[in-house]
Image 1 (tube, rainbow, N blue to C red):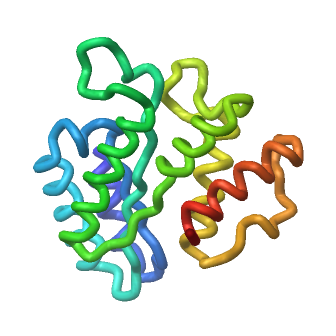
Image 2: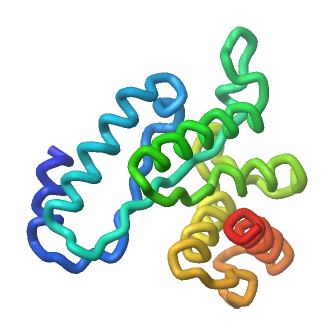
Length: 173
């Protein structure tokens, strides 16, 4: 059903500049071959209809709820690193860029515990997490210093500036 919608959107015009692909959080680690096959299929689908469109991979974050006794994830940082490695490997195989949202999450999670990046399920992003994700994407896609943006959304200036700084450092350092 969703695939048909994607096909329809891609075939309707040739004016996409970017298509960003994100997999379910642990699939790149748990089943790399399925992840890579999905990327291959979607990249081919995009390239068949979009002449000047860049496909980018959206590397997501580790999350506290996945770090449990007996799992392969010993920490949020470890989980994110495994996800990042899978995205980098796939991107290298397909000659794609990666937006490292997870890396920014890890930095903030480890260094700014006062910022709640996760929603109530301790897995999905909160408003602050979504803001951080957007900052990474904007900085990466448009090669801009996100720290100069005056937009803080519903966040206080200190929190927004911390998130902008984290995004900037991941994209440009």
